[in-house]
Image (cartoon, rainbow, N blue to C red; front, side, top):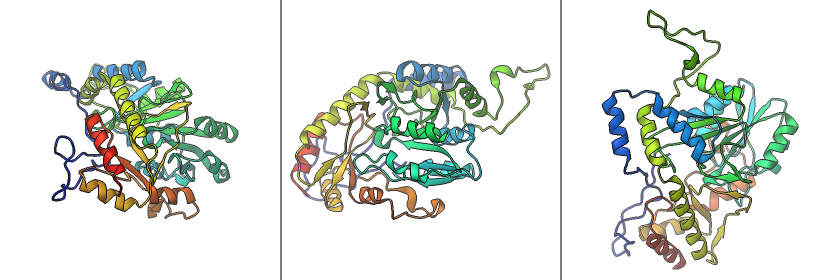
Length: 386
């Protein structure tokens, strides 16, 4: 996903606090990152090593992830989850179109077919009520994408999966730090995939993690992330070669110590940063509670969003975007439904909620550099109309 920038202010436009345009995203880098990364460079040990293991341990201890395997991207996590789940040629995976293309591309990569279910207009997440009639004898998995960091209805999805003997894979690219019914995202489903790409809550430059609840599947994930070789049980022999016997296809998906050093630095104060992000969201909600032309997304009390995005539905969206741009404020859909791509079969017009969502969803700035003064400015700008 590219960083979305704001066009220059139009002449005479009122400048936001600080005098510069307010972007939708920024990249957070902790002050300790420079020292941590410099230490790795000085050691000259840049590949996967002890820092990757430390990063994984802290993901588990601090964010509640179960058996997290650190990988080089969230896309790698999705692909490896499908492989370890046994999804392959001729299989089908049900998912929502409200996501980035990586979710469905990985399904195609393993030879399976992406089958799109409709979304809840009020959340952007897959609608459990639209899943079951799409299940066939070829269906192997349900991929639940937590749009903007807000968890899907996992209890209903798990019930369907249990009834039809399906695997549940969470695309939690937006969701580190989110919870569902008191459980951390990363501990709930068969597989959970995270992204540590540059503008996510927690970045390693680029990277990801894959959590597998079943210990045996987790061992397979760790083995197959590095060519299918079990590093822990493949000692170097006297002539300098590892002793191993490949039994299935593996990949070069492991994270490096160089990237893990950045990730470890950025874990510092993560809970506090999430708390501040939630406070900014509440400021938005309070300020925009009764604004005509805005319909807020639904939020249930049994789950806590990671708040990667702050979005809502808006009337006259293009007019809204232009009005915000004139005041130095970024506004974007981030992604429209991906089912319009020929690779995935072309746009399905029967997905009525997805089509409505495509027409009215909008997101405004939410990131670590955002100040309460800027949020107040954005709220006031919206209240002035569009």
